Length: 281
Image (tube, rainbow, N blue to C red; front, side, top):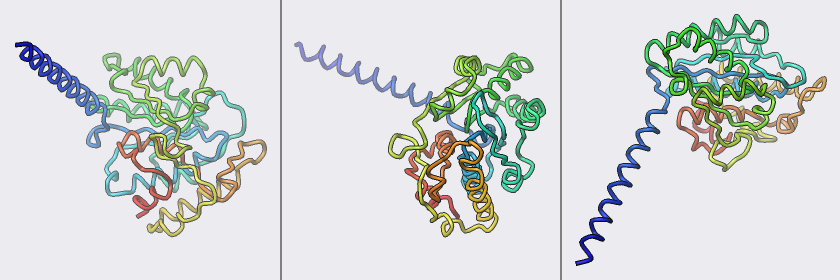
């Protein structure tokens, strides 16, 4: 006689677990990048590490692949926070890689914000979401979110603006008020560090690596990578800039791209060799 209540309890527990799993699955799906209507913003601080230069080359490599060529994206250079050190000028590389699809916040932050806001408003007004990969700090993002709140007050930024950050250091050199504001108002996602392999994010920092030269098949992409490597070596550790040991050894560091991979749901990529094998074209 006691078996019936036990069976009923077991069935009830299974139903609750299934319902909970379904709800969680729906939440995960609701937070996925929608290639048909969402906007990807990639904010590069370019100060003082040269890793952003390599990340820009890796970004356009990914965006040029058939899986992602229809993604609506925009790059922003010079979105640095309060860190000391000199800027790594990315303009020639960004122009070659992104053509007119980038903004220069280092030269004019307000103008860059206006340019980005045009794209953001267009996306939000068409029921798309904004996804921000922080290849640096969140100070520019804080300005952007405040602009959205001012110009589109009906938009719930906590569900419509997704911010992805992989670096503890980037958070430390974001102005405290900006970091606190972005974390409190947006869908802020802190992911495992893209400098390491095997932690749940792709690890895109690799010393003494030159195999990309044979993996990149597209002539334009090859030229972009050649320029990125050249700029990286020219500015790495120069005039007090951060000395990236992976770059100094002849390797690559595009660790910030781990955030874009996370946004696109391809965080199963292990490392740089696998990235070039799958997306080097």
